[in-house]
Length: 60
Length: 268
Image (tube, rainbow over all chains, first blue to last red; front, side):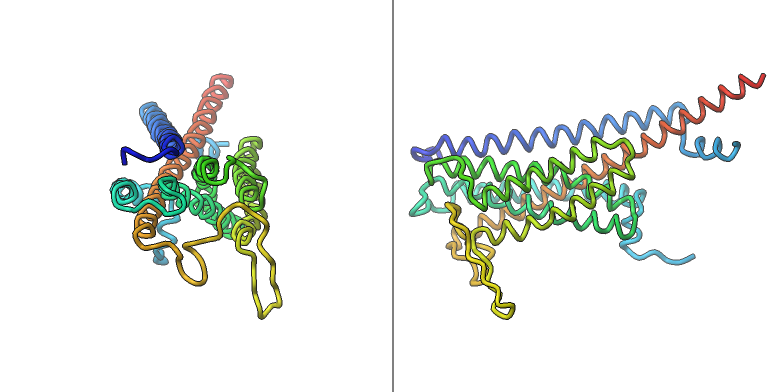
């Protein structure tokens, strides 16, 4: 593995770029998921539910 | 009360969230484990190709990425069709989530293909049928993502993106026949392959794979690992999309509550 011949830069380049792109996608998905979960917790803490909206609509 | 079948249960966002909460870590663990085994076999066990030398190592990344780029689009088109026919929000969630993951794998196929092409063909890129059709596939993904982002009315955006995804599915058979042509004797159809630098298919072909098992087995193991990784990413993106829609709905609830208070105060 250590000697990948004269084209090693292309082989390593492929794997490094793929790793970076997939890592960015995974980090983005995980961080977005965490941010959404925190936002939902915030709504829950403030007592806002979808039922509030329905209740208001019924009141109208 | 009518008993729900498994598909109806999975289509329920609440059940889907509970199911994927348990399923996602298992799929992720399996994907990482299988890709690790596949990469070990690719780098330490698989022999050097007699023609391509060490650059054949790029194949273990390039081929699964290309397959998944196309599979992602097919999944997005099926989800889009389901959304248009059954109007189920989860089908739309699936279609939306497929776009970003599929685009990433198509991008990986294009980049690794270019890096494989330079030492083998002497160029990173040629405007031949295979490479150009995969580039169009990538642009289709980007177009669908852009279309969704550009329309404020989400229901309208979902419908338009679904129609675009279904129309764009025509690119998939085009990619397939671009290097091998199409011969259907009973239809009298015989399309020759285009003049291309890209090699003809050596795994998914009618006469069986032409790759030696010492290279084919690591390739298939990597393909399985990356497929599981694709589904793990797709499920995670779907979960995020469900949470985003829930937040949007709660924001509307909050606005409705504020307006309700304001009107109460105004009435005093």
